[in-house]
Image (tube, rainbow, N blue to C red; front, side, top):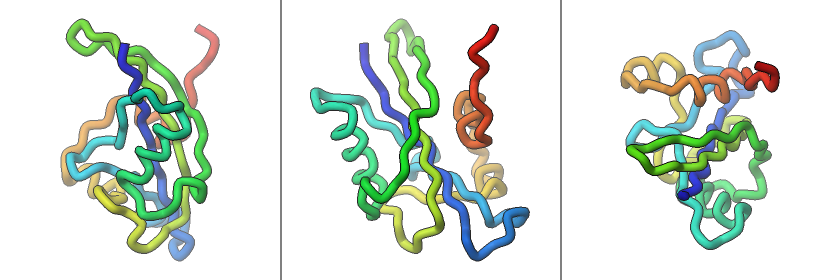
Length: 131
């Protein structure tokens, strides 16, 4: 079974009003995806460091990271265990190596379809533990 680590990175602008469209942005790769990495033989922390260094110029330790959720995904008969981390950052000029932070209108313009799983991470709505 493969283990996939995904990162939902949300950026807030200190220079905008919180109701402004420019206040919140979400990071997407150049392929318009939530960034992820398939875990290797490294431990979780080292794998996350690799993920951050692939997409950001800012040091891994600067980001406050939180474990958000976990799921099993059936990808054509291959089961993938996905762990999603979330980070909230202030706006940092030229912080991205690959990809970019997008406003919600830009996400819509690019016709990026987000799974509800990632939408919950972006909006901060957790999963209920009671069913």
